[in-house]
Image (cartoon, rainbow, N blue to C red):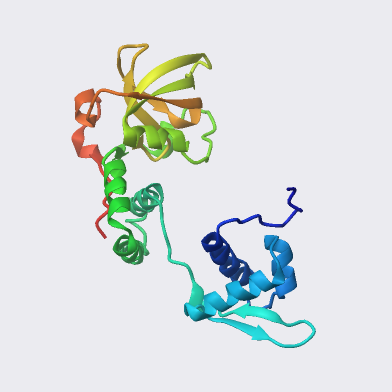
Length: 254
């Protein structure tokens, strides 16, 4: 059976009820007619009416508006969905907060993070803890301009595949372009992300060189999680030549 553009084919009733609420929330305070909803979800108007009744009986604030342009409308304020951050998003906030500690907004930012942490499920927080322990922020005694090598740093998000491999301790295969524009394929046991004011790096054990290496993230052309388990290595095991006094872990504690 083909589905017309914009229509939603939902077989499971529970999923359809949830989708109905989201549809009504998206257009609130404008109403949606039963016929419009029936076309969208490819069911009969009678099915929509039964679904709306079920939502009302469960306490969802859905109301009927009479008139030619009437229909069903939902109280958007009373149906806001719970805020649900991923572990990576929580860590991203902690990293950003660390960068904001010298600004006038540091206290407000810390308070905002506390609210996020208080609402996060236990399992999600455990995953965030595992990830944040694989992040290092590196202070420098040099200015930003002296750290840059003349290349343009790409302001892109760290590839999700790398973040997931670090947490899961899976071997990565990287296509990596070095400072001389030479591209090599590397098998890497990822250990941590390390960030300076100028660049972010993936720190790990390079099987090609058989030693610890730091890969600048904006030079990683492609990354594949092989799914193969990597040996357990801690950041300290890599013997990175950076004084401990310049290295810190972002704080998740609000």
